Amino acid sequence: MREPLAKKVVDIKPSGIRKFFDIVSEMKDAISLGVGEPDFDTPWHIRDEGIYALEKGRTFYTSNAGLKELRVEIANYMKRSQDLEYHPLDQILVTVGGSEGIDMALRAMCDPGDEVLIPQPSYVSYEPCAILAGAVPVIIDLKPENEFRLTAQEIEDAVTDKTKVIVLPFPNNPTGAIMEKSDLEAVAEVIAKHDLYVISDEIYGELTYKGKHISIATMPGMQERTILINGFSKAYAMTGWRLGYACGPANIIAQMTKIHQFAIMCAPTTSQYAAIEAIKNGDADIARMRESYNMRRRFLLNSFREMGIECFEPYGAFYVFPCIKEFGMTSDEFATRFLKEEKVAAVPGTAFGNSGEGYLRISYAYSLERLEEAMKRFAHFVETLHSEKKED
Image 1 (spheres, rainbow, N blue to C red):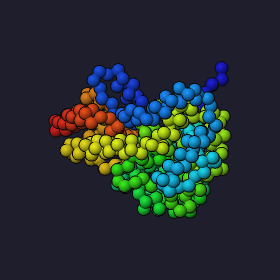
Image 2 (image 1 turned 90 degrees about the horizontal axis):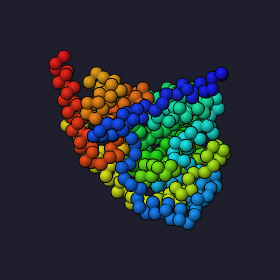
Image 3 (image 1 turned 60 degrees about the vertical axis):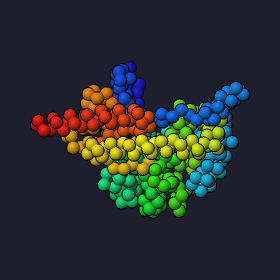
Image 4 (image 1 turned 90 degrees about the vertical axis):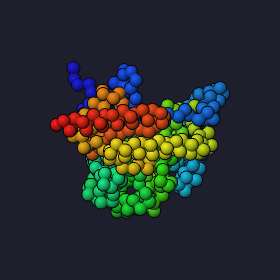
């Protein structure tokens, strides 16, 4: 028989996040700090709208691009949060989570051989999605001395005449890094100079702890060359509802909608009705959850400080990215041993790219009680490693 599988798919490595959590699920008294999922329930008023939609029999397909009422509310939200104008009927597409938006944007914009700049460490989907779109991923290694921000010079150094798209993954998963206005201004200048397009993944945009998130699309000349990806999973604790959206130039959104039409048809109808309520009346929910995340963020940073573990201060998302290079182990070795000896799961930094070597991703989308217990175990593990060093 001929080989049934596509080589480009076989060659893609599976996500480096999941293997630890398969082990955790079988381990008694284990604590998982790895999955990027809010521990909050979806706020009741949002769930209630989903229930009401089911009770009313609203279980049919919506238009391919999503409910008009939802796209209008997304446009309103973009105006009030970023002062960006998007036409709801031809510049906004409702997607099955932010990940589908990333995939469709790359497929709609890339021809075979086009290069896509991907800063890493970053979300695990960008590189595989670029490959599946027939593009060539070009990795930009973000540096700890820059607090894992992307610099204009790093783009300059990576651009070739084949470069077409750059992914902007901020606020960043896994590092928690953000880009401030001055960072974006410098980056935008280089992007315009080389006539690049941007996929700006802003799924954590509502969860920032140092002023308000600023989108690259607000920079002069950037809106017409940016696909802005966002969604409901992180900000509204709606991960299982599988709903996101893409905003951008009408000609790109039209082609993304075509892909969406053939592959998906439409995003879940019940979720769309719930999302209308979320985006209209959920600002207070976001503020409440963000305050809780911020308290947990400060607790983890203080814990690492007390242990003498190097960890830069993240100002976005709900992750910290402590450095474990001093222990002379790879990230995978450290995370594996930490899980086996202390029954705490963290994600090796290398799950997010080679530049994550020497780091761990720890999520603080968990209760303070669980985080306190995890940090006790982390401190005990660090003491064990220090004792072993002394014996050597």
